[in-house]
Amino acid sequence: MDGPDIERFGARAEAMLEELAAISEEPDRLTRRFLTPEHKRAAHLVGQWMAEAGMSVAEDALGTVRGHYGREGEAAGSNAVPRLLIGSHIDTVINAGKYDGMLGVVAGILAIEHFRDRNQRFGFAIDVLAFGDEEGSRFPTVLSSSAAVAGAFEDRWLPGLDVDGIALDQAMRDYGLDPQAVAAAALPREEALAYVEVHIEQGPVLEHQDAPLGVVTSIAGQFRTRVTVRGMAGHAGTVPMAMRQDALVAASEMVISAEAIARAHPEAAMVATVGTMKVMPGAANVVPDIVEFVLDLRASSDPPRFKALAEFTHRVEKIAAARGCTVTLETYHDCATAACAPWLQDGFARSLETLGLPAPRLVSGAGHDGQAMSKLTDFAMLFVRCKGGISHNPVEFASVRDMGLAVAALIRFIEDFDPARRH
Ligand code: HGY
Ligand code: MN
Ligand code: MN
Image (cartoon, rainbow, N blue to C red; front, side, top):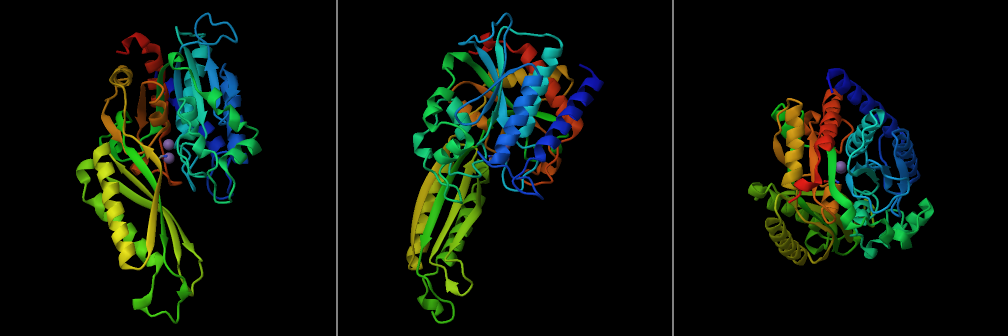
């Protein structure tokens, strides 16, 4: 693989990402949430690309598009075939960038296309997986579609409601899926050789080190905890300040306390974010009586994360009591820190070295499908430099050259992949 190949891979990736980015729920920004008609259109497009790259294509009960590239001598329709899994997600956050998730799916497809063009087969099959619920931007679930492949889907997620009051299982039926068939989406453990993912770094480290690519060592664990504060509605003009049970002021103090807890633990790379808040009844001249917000709390290891949630719980109960309010917390997502398998990390490091590139190793503060897939098999990730480390923002950017290098590194990784190295 030489320079022109790298440029060609990168240009193809850019064009495919552009095409996917045009499929949005909103006219002037990219938003594509799980099981929406736009998810279905993007899944169909990805399925077409997989078929054109020489894969057989299927869709599982969670809408994951699964391309299969058979191993040497594999007869059509064989099952129980050992396979290397490559994937990422095609759902987005609200007002997203076009690289987060989609780049990993496109890179997998371009790698298979490269092998198909050379009629190159391996002693193992390769599946490319396009997951639809990594971001958790529609239902109170996160990583549900990769969890289904890993056999870790939880039925308690099915009644979860989106902002319009549509339950996950209803949305699955509306999409043409069968919520009762989720178990069939699980891949038998003995068939999964490993899971690898190419993803933009979504942070500033690679750019700071002037490295186009990097090898992930582990993915930070995360909580998503719904906090509901209840006070007393009242007339904005008549309730004296000292007599208020203002749920929004209490909630605001709680958000500040979450920030203070995270700031106090840089050693754990702790981060706390409140990105959504519902204020009820939602009138300018009514003292709010119910406020609901979600805390996203992460750290580079689990013990400090658990301690921080306990500390936050203690502080919010005190804040609520002092303001004549009550508070309830419901942690609906608890994803453990997940370590990338050293033998797979080394595989990516070797592939970077053969391309004459540095192979920095780094932690991922962002969550990924690999955390769910780690319940099925060993996993690893290859990070791609992104401009300013910006992500979850429409200015998110990865260069054509860096994306081309990522595809080339993935190809090298696959050519060098040997399941016998798993120890
Ligand atoms: O939130 C995350 O870390 C990921 O982008 N879903
Ligand atoms: Mn994301
Ligand atoms: Mn992502």
